[in-house]
Amino acid sequence: MSGSPQDHEVVFESGDRSACMELRLVLEAAGIAAHAQSRRGRWRLIVAAEDASAALRELAEYRRENQSRSTETVSVTPTYAGAGIGVIAYAAITVAIGLATLPWGLGLDLFTPGEMQAGKVLAGGGWRCVTALTLHVDEGHLASNLLFGVLFGFLAGRTLGGGIAWLSIVSAGAAGNWINAMIQQPDHRSVGASTAVFAALGILVAVALRPRSSSRESRLRRWRPLVAGVMLLALIGVGGERTDVTAHVTGFFAGLLIGAISSRIPTRWLADERSQWLAGLAAFAVVTLAWVVALSVA
Image (cartoon, rainbow, N blue to C red; front, side):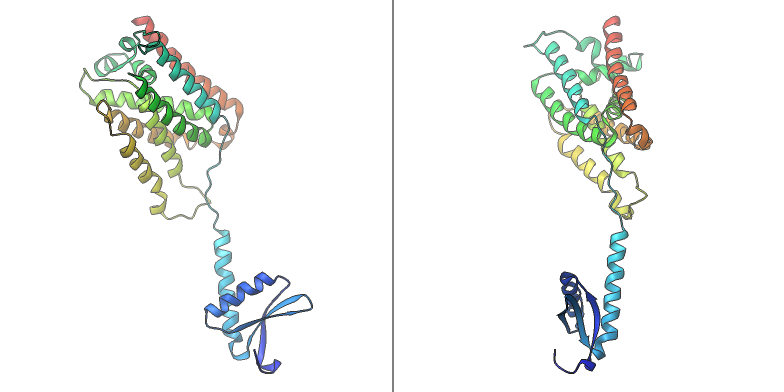
């Protein structure tokens, strides 16, 4: 930059070279010629005197925009412990009952007392809404629900804590089966953990939909989890000859409702190890009690 010192003005000075170079690019992008100069360990940004006012305005605006961006905190859902223990318990129960019922295992008939049959559920067999979640017709059915159950269950466990997540999943899965029973013909039968699997997906969506006080996302952007959840439901919950699509939908819907409640549990409870263990034991007790009743009345 040529000319006498009186023809130029310093609009920025710092010991940080990168900051000086960054602001030089800002000015040049605005059409203002700027020169970076190092003097005695300090970096200065120099412009022509007639451009000084415009340069200072551009730099001030740039700082305001950066400050605005830095004060916008990104909404991050906290994570909690117990997710691993939760999915291990789920996998153990699912595999154990699979071994007890599949032909190459013990071959026990647990379907008669435990399957979800709409008429029997509405006639007082509400335990079937729970026991049906643990039954699978073949290895492929079991493997599929094991895979997606572990995936969605782990994510829900990280979001709500292992115990509370699985109590929510079992509750929503049972509620999904109950709703399914109410809208199906009396002779409709259904088994499988998939109702609970899609309930877990619904819970994840509900937690993600809850607005955070620190988030400045638009309402439209906040609805993205629901869109993604519905797309996943359509992608993995509709195919197959023996797929009970209605059960998947009712499970997802029940998960949204239960998830909306669970997402409002105080953080101190979610972070409390004792609360998580009590909730996890409650989930296990619900499944165990349902099977005790099922086998006692068989």
